[in-house]
Length: 319
Image (tube, rainbow, N blue to C red):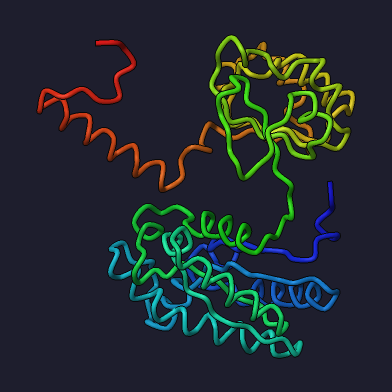
């Protein structure tokens, strides 16, 4: 697996908590350090794309507000004012290192539509001129981040990384049922997947075919520096085998969003490796993207509506 230093193009996502003080005001010293670091990365031969928050914090300062607005229009106003200030700040700071920047205000919905190619073309041309694109969510028209208090820029950064082909990954996949197919990627056997993959990411249900699929035998086939991610179900992994694989340095790292019993039980073998720097466990939140939550609400509404109309949808039983 390539190191970050080996990558030609790097996407950096900087959140509001990194750029601001607890008061919500911009941390100027930290921004200066960020710019200096990114300038050095660019000067070392890398192509840099910056996905940056911070506009609301700057807007608060410009408008003389001591507290972050609680209403959406107030946040939008701060963001609109702050975007000008944010780009002025980035422009001046990067200019000290003879680097130009360009602002790209996007929404992920635009990036998911046919206009995505326009964004890609503009970004590629900017990068060819050694310009650093500074990308932010257009909060005056896209208010998901403002209303839900979650990092919509996180989703935006992931999409931008895909557009920029920042990671240069070859994607292969294995299907336990053999029914799934995707013409964009190559389907392989389970053994080939384990032997070849630098990152193994699990997105599967728990059933007879997947129960303890990742066992001692599977871990021994993986690369020594491979990363395992489980975003499916906890029972897909044999916890004892995983703990031993980490203890014996048979794999490089593991990230778990699901466990066998949540929260983790006191007798779970994974407790032995919780303090390892290459073990990351999150509390079953990988599903909670804005799109997923919106879809949940929409599905509940449609199910209730169908029930009231005497219709059946999303039934798991034969009626």
